[in-house]
Image 1 (cartoon, rainbow, N blue to C red):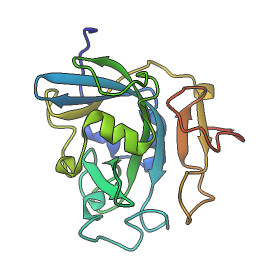
Image 2: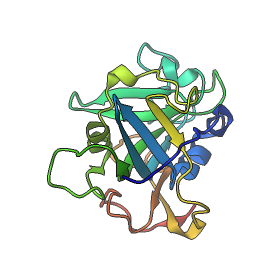
Image 3: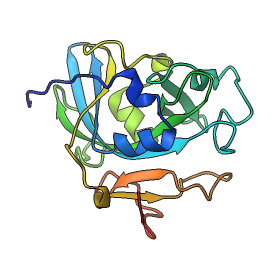
Amino acid sequence: MLSMECDPYPRHFFERSPDVVAFDLIGSHLVVRRGSHTTYALIVETEAYGGSDDPASHSFRGPTPRSEVMFGPAGVLYVYRSYGIHWCVNVVTGMVGLAGAVLLRGAEIVDRSEELAGPESDAVVLRGPGNLSRGLGITDADNHLDCCQSSQGRIAFCGGLQDVARDRIGRTPRLGISKGVERVSRYFLIGHRAVSGSRIQNVTSA
């Protein structure tokens, strides 16, 4: 296991527009602690979701029992079940009252203190939002979890790759939605195996 330290991103890192945060999270680490085990995952794919300006967002029509967390403090997790099958992990962005969130779509395990089940390599086991939540053991029990409170908290975001070149980060429309399909709010590390395989053609510069 590598020796890694994590100073969590402060709240003001997340108190920006979802697209800015989604871009800046590429190359960052997601740190997940389960008991005595800690896993570091390099974030390689994200999607940004806004509020009343984004029909694909859960917050489009205002707060609901499910989406109200998106209107709260930035840096808090929003975890929901997709199609009744798997959990999707988001981090809330923007100022209180202005809903926004970033969906974590793909990551690569770069350091861990335990073995994950399954034959897939660390580079692809967290490809796709369902695999990411499952591989890191994130569920609805982590909904509303504040990732900015402590360096020893259960889940945190911290610096990863330093100075990722802008031309290494691709940008395309989001995947798997039927509304707001024209919004170019998906970001990813070009060429990484943990990035979703479809619709990565026609990449535009972020």
